[in-house]
Amino acid sequence: MNKSATNKDINLEEEPIDKFKRNLEFNIDENYEYVSKGKIFSFISNMVYYGIAFPILKILTKIVYNLKIEGKENIKNIKTGAISVSNHVLFLDCAIIGLATISKRIYYTTTEENFKIPFIRKLIKLLRAIPIPKSIKNREYFMNEIENLLRTNNIIHFYPEATLVPYCNKIRSFKNGAFDIAAKNQVPIIPMLFTFKEPKGIRKILKRKQDVILTILNPVVCKENIDTKDKAKILKRMVYEEMLEIS
Image (cartoon, rainbow, N blue to C red; front, top):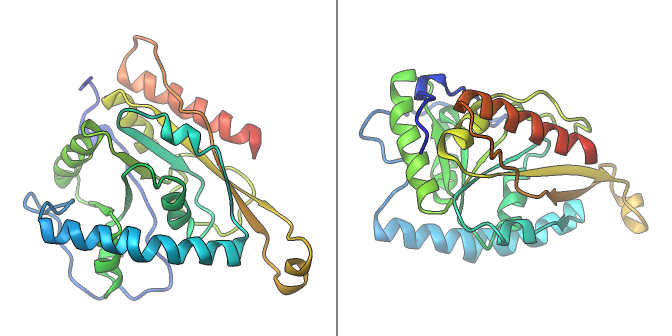
């Protein structure tokens, strides 16, 4: 892997989940286990993810959003680790991404502030959330875990827009973190785009919000033999333009 970009160079930003009180202590240091390795935890996590969350969310998102997912084959064809990115426009958008990527193991990055919320922090941990440390000195341990997950062919999801803006119908500017990581680890980026459509039939009468389509685009790679920082800039531009084109 190309290591010319340092962990301090990688700009990772994510907004916390809104509407929750964050009154629990949560500290990340070199001993924090980003992905629990225990067999009991893994068993419970898989049971919650596949046995409870998946079927409930599949029904819920169909009722609430009349959800349509396009381009699942672009996930199935990935044979290596990858970074996925999407616009951040729904409170349940990470759940929808989980439904779209059920054929692969995916982890979701989030602010460490979300791990200070009672009960929620245990749930999101079971559902494969990984906290992004605020402290620069702890970024090295975070990056080591991300790189381990990528080496073992997992997908790591980022929201490069950082801030959740419900039902936003335009692509906002991107932070650099996801693209820096993809360039440094030489893995593809899978762009995903949430778009909206007006409900039809009885749904038009019963609901005010628009229905949702998630489109999974072709993986984006930069094959040029250039500096990692330059490659990250190219990836960022390519992904932004791909998403903008169909938004």
